[in-house]
Image (cartoon, rainbow, N blue to C red; front, side, top):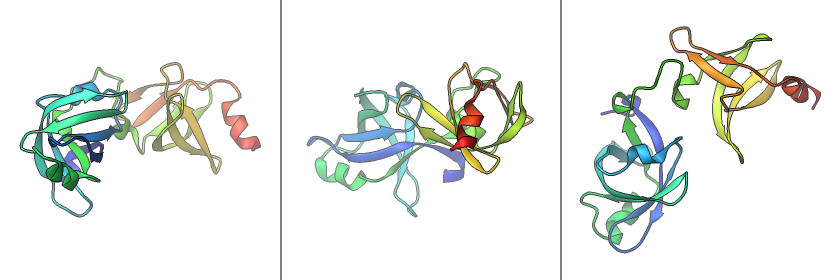
Length: 177
């Protein structure tokens, strides 16, 4: 398995406790989808992926969980995992309904608003205080669009286009600053 065949789920923030558990910070919409029994890979920068299986997971909040990996049984082993990126095979992601998407899939998509037409291209997804934000460039300015059903979606995966319904005045707010 290579990094190109996987998606990043998050990273190991630190060892937790004495029996091999670690605190993982996730960068996914629903961390509960990757719980007990999930086959994942861990790797630090420039190191090969190492397979691991989640034997137990206790969700702390929407972004963090305490995770136990099979075969990691003491603090020394869990300390060695600190800073590792957590990967999941893209081929094993649950299939989403038509028009729905995983955030990583829309990077590079054209953004097309139902009123304003083509606006730009998705550059990144950012964690916002209240919700995740789509980052795009419009007339040379960075624009942040809340990733809420009221404003974003559906995505045309074949044409690589993300459809939006931006609230009136959103783009103008960025152009004025």
